[in-house]
Length: 81
Image (cartoon, rainbow, N blue to C red; front, side):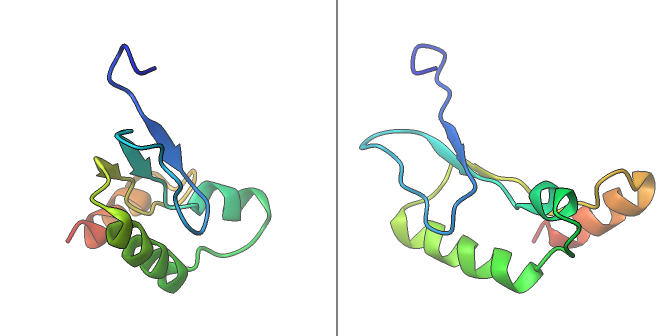
């Protein structure tokens, strides 16, 4: 993964990247969906704050609605800012 310039995508409450590792932050929406739970946007924002406190991730996956097509796209666009 290092050779390709990839990093890990963190899903935990507090990301734990290795020194110098490129890392991204996942939104956790799919895991909530798998457990039959609603997505918690406030929790995601708190996780995002913790992630930024550790350093800038190279990417963050905007929240989505699993298997919801255009409704998911509209929902995700609202999270972009």
